Amino acid sequence: MPIMPAVKIAFVSGNREKLPDGVVPLGILYVMASTPDRHEKKLIDLCFERSPEEALQDQLRAWQPDLVAIGMRNIQNNDYSGISDNVDYYRGLVSAVRDASDAPVVVGGSGFSVMPAELMPRLGADFGISGEGEGAFPKLVEALEAGGSGDAALAEIGSLHRLREGSVESNPVDRNFLDMNEIPVPDRRLADSRYYERYAIESIQTKRGCPLLCNYCTYPIIEGRVGRAREPGAVVDEMFACLEQQPDIRHFFIVDSVFNLPRTHAKNVCRELIARDWQIPWTCYANPLGFDQEMAELAKQAGCAGMEIGSDSGVDAVLKRLRKGFTTDEIRRIHELCKSAGIPDCHTFILGTAGETLDDVKQTLDFAVELDPFSAILMMWVDDFEALDPALRAERMKLRDDIKALLLERKEQYPYWSIPPLAINFDARLFQRLRRHGMHGPLWQFVRLGDLND
Image 1 (spheres, rainbow, N blue to C red):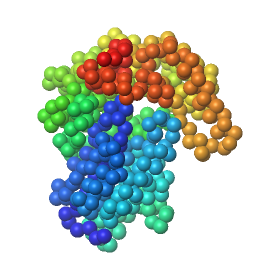
Image 2 (image 1 turned 60 degrees about the horizontal axis):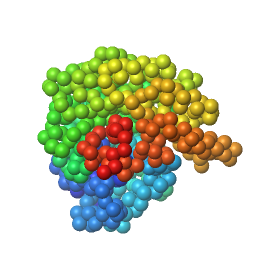
Image 3 (image 1 turned 135 degrees about the vertical axis):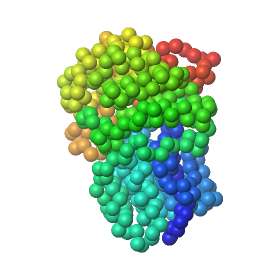
Image 4 (image 1 turned 30 degrees about the horizontal axis):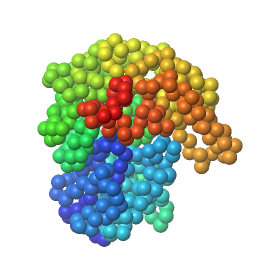
């Protein structure tokens, strides 16, 4: 249908994951803030809906938007076993839109950005935007406003994908990354109040882009490798503004791919927090590379309550194959620096990566026990089994089963660790008990408190 100014745009946050926390849809709020205010904008958040497709249709029929934008935060299933269930869910959302509205559908978000060409035909949307949407989405709206005369403009939008008669047409990737200091700040007042009432945690981004070369990571695909940092003062301004907009916030999570790289930027953010007497605890992702004593001490003074470290393996050969850029000695060093500064450290290990043997997995578990971090999260590598030849598929499936059996056999050695694929220290009832006792933030910090049954 023709789209005329001002456009009524329904922004749909499809994410329903609430383990360990319901996550404020920061990405779609950024895109909303970057869309000109002359348009009518409405956020439809499905996180807390019992029947998401029905709830979506009810709001679309009542509001009658001209364009529907669906944010796809992730593609991974909740049990970390694959992507099929989650992709089917988002395809169902697109179908629900079709049944309730004639409006074109555009899909974007970090999950979509990982594999846009593959997802477009599976989802059935009219358009897709991969990577940063704050620049591309307003251009798409403008082109659609122009109707047929906007076809040339569509061809100029970087990272835009179109589905035509079952075929995907993808524009070249936009290499002109956005200046983080020029992107409008999201309005948290638009977010569902239940995020704050139930979880009391907020996300903040201090930069985008990751120059690291880890061979499995999707951050460079989503954000690019070019680092773009925000002014530390602007970051802290936004954090204080969040508290004014949502007074129930009790914790912040810095969602940068790695907070402590580059070091100068991270240290300056910490210095700004210290100078302005910041009081709310926060956690972040950290990397052993470039981590030093000053970073640990500044983070602690600035209110850091914990760091999540992507250590991945306790075997140097595996770390080299994963192109992590650090060794087990550097993992030990960041642990000791965090411990000496009084910062709880949680190390994530990925078991069963490509080329890894069961002996490698055993060595990693032994290393983690010897390291004795405050906490650890044990993940299992997820293969796309359908893409493997039968012999390799059988081999990889056997390794996965062997790893599960090993974890069950050894779980008593690490009672404070989380193993999401086996729902060990990672289940809704545990998290509910912790929150009833006033715990906020990443809940691995509190498992050591023991049994909190009422």
